[in-house]
Image 1 (cartoon, one colour):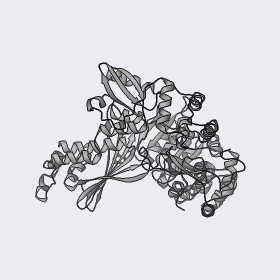
Image 2: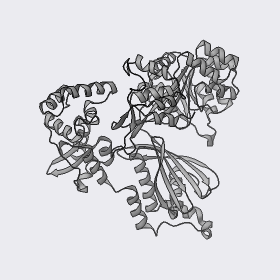
Image 3: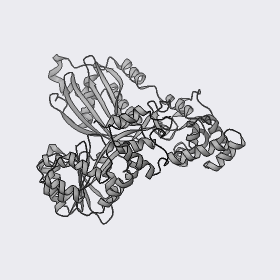
Image 4: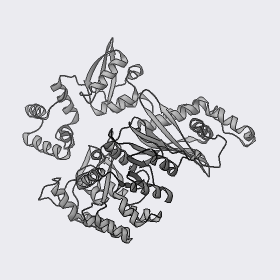
Length: 582
């Protein structure tokens, strides 16, 4: 049940909503940018979104409803769970007897309709609606975070208490009691629920002098969410410590733990870090979806020669593949994509990780536990005795780990791991700093991938062209002639185009996309360790000389890869420059 482009074209022309030339132009843009024709028609302002949806509803024979100002009864809303409604843009709005009317944006989402039918045991009547209508309904599921917390704290102000100095004798008992109090449990549960719904990767709970600040990291950017009264501080910390099985009465030393959050709709592993700071204890919780699946290399943003280099090196049975970048740059996700390709019945893959971010079938994953002495070094020593073909070490942190990893690569294993360096060439210097011999590095290294994550532009983005002054500024960052040549070779732009008439995009904030960005993709540089590079490593040259040789061989730098993705409309030039510190 889908409106085909030619079918849509016939109805649009028949209704005189667009001209034939306008439709053909929009279709070319859609193919070039890999967007739906419907999105292009709206973004180019050829037709209003509501008019387009009404037309699609007419073509498909599905009634159209506008619910932008409708208030839905809570008992109707609750028939479809909130996470399902948010993730699938679908909501119940009217019930008559055994019939349930459901508003949705995608009439092809038959799996969700079937799920609701089974869950509610009702006859589902689908209706097409606008994104604004769905947004209005989703707002009604619950009050905003501030209001929700305001009510919790207002009702329970008396029951959240701070442990006074004279009560220190029974501090542990008081904290245990505070952790089990209903308002504290509700505060922590609500914080987690909102973070998951907003796709946050981390929750920061920071004690200030007179209040507690809560921040979420969404798409790599930290955002203030709300402040809580200082009275709630000890109860929240105690609750999280109890959930993570940490010492309640230890306030002077850092502590690390973990717990799980599980409902019918989602299952998350929460990694907890608690650090003593001036005003108390700061908590950072990393949210890891246990249902997450590994991406393909193409989905992560690898393309062209870089993708071919990786695929060729994955066919090598021995050696080392390193992924580099700062914390939070998606290194582990890239390694999981690589393991997904290598994970076949005839191969034994063993990993030692901290933490295990995704669970993968047929792969033997070991979780680091420093409390009992299970470090990367100890884990790697044991893995070698497990008859592996491929070993994945979550991170190379010290001299002993790098020594064991190189020895494993020399003795017939393919070793995958990560390093904290700013560039691909910098990985060689980092290995040398960890006392690895240059001849061992050159004989084991296969390929090095450096990466950053940039935010993706929403479909509703603003088109513009570079000014001469902007082109001159960009020349300071990379070789524009090289990028222009690649854009033409890969037919991203036409042969006659130049920097003055290539379409670029800026974020355009909207109600559905508050900052103009949603989700992330990677920008990469892939250094293939050729014979020329190996010779330079043996000579002990600087990382700058290795970088220069790699670029002469055709390696794209991260910023060049970023500019190509900006020309494709995936991200903005400003976003690329933001994540790469020169």
